[in-house]
Amino acid sequence: MSIRILINNPIDEPSLAKLNAMEGVEVRISPDPVKEDPPILPEEMLKETEIFFTTFLPEDHEAMENLKLLQIGSAGYSQLLGARLPERGIRACNGSGIFDTAIAEWNLAMMVNLIRNFRQMTRHQDQGIWDRGGDFQRSLRGRTVGFWGYGGLARETARLCQAAGMKVHALTRDGMKPRLAHFTVPETGDLDGVIPEKIFTENQTGSFLRDLDFLIMALPLNSETQGMVGSAELKQLPPGAYLLNPARGPLIQEEALLTALKEGWIAGAALDTHYHYPMPPDHPLWYFDNVIMTPHIAGSGEGEYFLPRLWNLFLQNVESFLHDRPLLNELSAEALNMR
Image 1 (cartoon, rainbow, N blue to C red):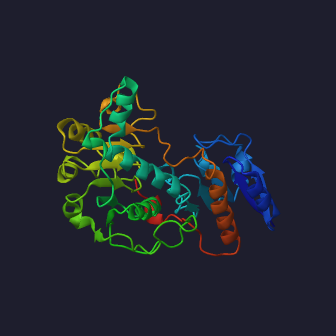
Image 2 (cartoon, rainbow, N blue to C red):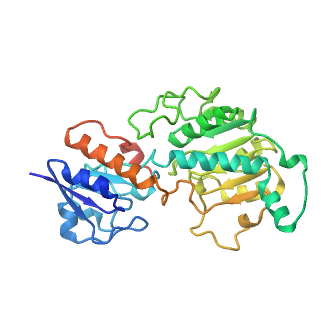
Image 3 (cartoon, rainbow, N blue to C red):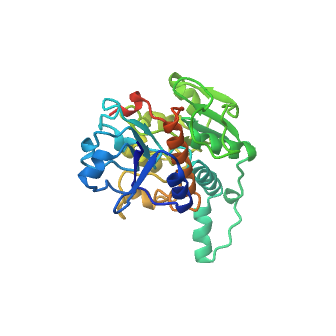
């Protein structure tokens, strides 16, 4: 008997053809595939589905009584918390890895923009001002970048930073480990964790922060990480340090960040993830001269590589599931049970 697969993500036609050609699968497409909101699907379709390819669960996901495998298209998985997936015997995998190269490029671009103060140079261009001040001529080479978390996006950014002549530090929960059983674009990243010159663990936060020129947040958002960066942590950064957050906005306490920028605890920030979606036009973060705001596009979900990589990951996991092999990006019961 064929295993029933339901697709509720944008279609990559070559990949769909490969899926349909697999033995032992029956593929159905959602009547209205969406990736930004919980889908509304017929109850019978939900009941019959055994493998679900989506980004958000439907509100009536409890009706999916036969569901065995859930593959989501996002790296973040907070939308799955509270769904009791482990208790229901449902395995879940996220989209970690498909965004790594795009986010790493955003990180590098933001560091160059911040260190050379391109925001001010652009204003000068708009006003016809010729200013060759030293503030616009600084370099990344020799500076220290620290990653709070060392997953896929951090490892690929670290590779680019090493090529740019930067020193790389990393703070992890329990030390450095190889990155196994995760989707990785070939010839990217730091699978063995050998790039960082210094590695810090949880009880060494102050030592990690005090020597950085750039701090890049690279953690998932959950009850343990929400608000983990507050006034104390921001004050431990050097006044000349910059903060980049391509991960999740609420990792950093909003009021603490605003105060740090107002009072000059840090030199500036680049933010791609936020506290409101969309950010209100009157929010003060828009108006700092030393802050770059982008509308959660670092991962380039509309870019040319997104769909082929997402479907590549999904196809690999379907094959592995059918042949009882380890899955890529499988989320642990501990991760899925966090609040």
